[in-house]
Amino acid sequence: MKNSGLGRALRLVIGLGLTLLAVSPALALGGAAAKSGAWGLSSHVVMVLGTRGTVCTGTVLAPRVIVTAAHCTAGSKQVAVAYFEDGAPVLQIVTAVARHPGFSRNSAVSVDIALLRLENPLPSRFQPVSIDHGGAAGHIGESLTIAGFGLADERDAKSAGTLRTAEVELLPKLYPRFLRLGLDSQLSSLAICKGDSGGPVFAGGSGAPVLVGVVYAAERTGKAKACGAAAQAVRVSPQRGWIDGVMARW
Image 1 (tube, rainbow, N blue to C red):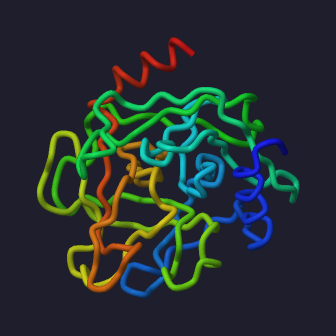
Image 2 (image 1 turned 135 degrees about the vertical axis):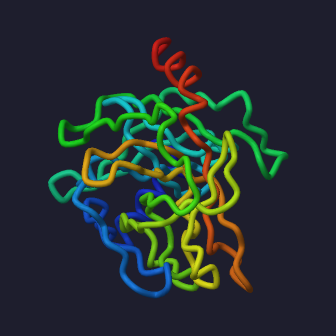
């Protein structure tokens, strides 16, 4: 592999023995396992790696297009996605990155999403998700699902790399472009952690998953440095025009 940064990232994936195809319930919310649902999220979600050593999460919008957090791509000379196929690790090189024009590396709150164009299509087992048209995540307490490859315990680097999910609630306040997610009754426990950035926020109940948001940050909890009780996400419905425009150009 020519790029030593990505080579190190992939060796980390292999060295930790990560099972990227497995979906495990997240244990962070209240310390109890959350239901992982029946959507088969491993067919919609991949790991995003950068040469800066970044590990993030991304969601499949098309066989060659992934949506993730823009900050996951900033500063890396090369970005790739990783997954396991037939038990072997696969690294897919990203040939184009489109960061939302509303993203700023110097602001704590910006439209922190990016699209990645892959060199080759993903295997057929990966299925693109639908994007919300604006009807979801409209009331406080609404049930949503988050997913990511982040740390289960910020003190244990080896706890990263397994795709985990958790059922969360839409927290106050309602914002036109952003979401706050967690469990209102358990804000002293951890919801998301390092590596979950770029991960999806899904609505859909018993139907097919609908992408509502992209996670970009954690609200710090107590002495936690990498994890937070609440997740912050960018709503995707207001960004559909930009997303559709980029995908049409690609």
